[in-house]
Image 1: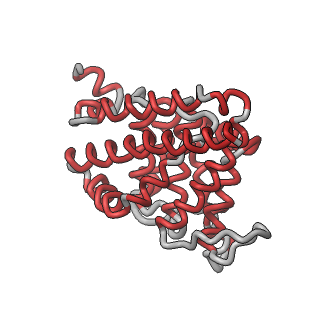
Image 2: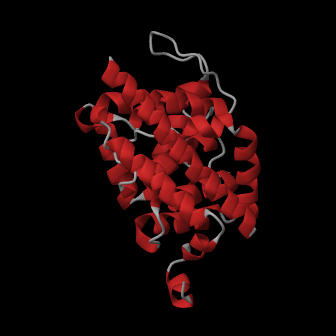
Image 3: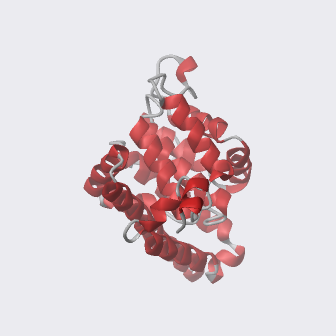
Amino acid sequence: MSSETSAADPLAPLLQLPGVREAADRARDALSAVHRHPANLRGWDKTATEASWRAGRSSAAIDGGSVDLRRDGDFDDPVLAGAMRVAQALDGDALEQFTGVFRRAPAQAFARLHMLAAAGLVDDPDELGRPSSAPGVAGRLDLLGQLVTGATAVPAPVLAAVVHGELLGLDAFPSANGVVARAASRLVCTSSGLDPHNLGVPEVTWLRRLDDYRTLSARFAEGDPAGVGAWIVLCCEALAAGAAEARSIADAARAG
């Protein structure tokens, strides 16, 4: 890769890190294949809804929330309630609207995700949708917005991992930050066309590999190339495994 390419695209050097390009290709191929599953050619709306529920529960559990779902649709645990509000906002007709906002104005989408995720976790409603005021956060969020809106041409799984890791490492929001970060990763996947119907469930793998998730997200935040590469590979592996989860949902839907 030429120095000119690297200078023009701030994320281009990430593709030279060991295993990154290959992991991104596997994630792309797996998600592309599951979108061609017979159950998803016409009935993707049903499989996507099941995926969103699994994603919400797993995302809440990663942050220590409950996974118990009540039949009446209410949730006793505020972390789970917030994660499920986010999951529902990234499903069905609402997803198309959210994805459109994310493409045009990522900061607005981040704020909206926080309002949904943290509604039961803050005492002051004015805190909802407001990023941390810590030094550097605003500037880094602006840079993320530029990446999302076209400042990079790296494969979508790589960009999703970067957005995810940056939001985690920045502690961009003072509450529900993990739920926001994982949802933002999903929005990269939908807005890029990698997973347009939100069929994948990478959150299941991040929960199963929680020690790796925490360790490698911290290494990503430190910025050393090996840690950054390992985090991106983990995220790509989760996307590929999330496609396998989506296939199991589609298989069950077709059998039923």
